[in-house]
Image 1 (cartoon, rainbow, N blue to C red):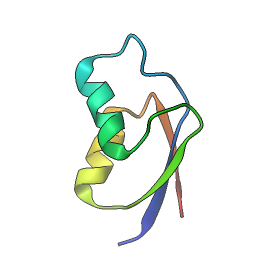
Image 2: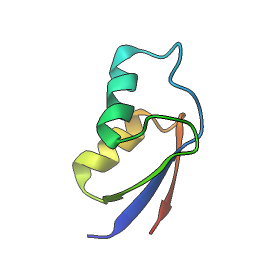
Image 3: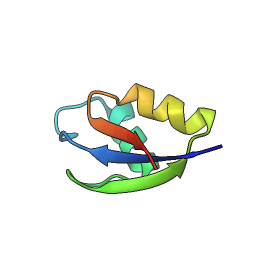
Image 4: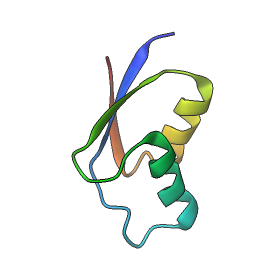
Length: 59
């Protein structure tokens, strides 16, 4: 299982509540913030749900 870096690139303002909660669950609070997670299926599913708000890269 590898690591994945997730960076928030767009705002969560005017987004659905479930998308805001997904960003919060990923540990993202502001634009430009980067967090690192294990590339598990649950994390990849959360990233897929907000893929229009974040960018990802292998760590």
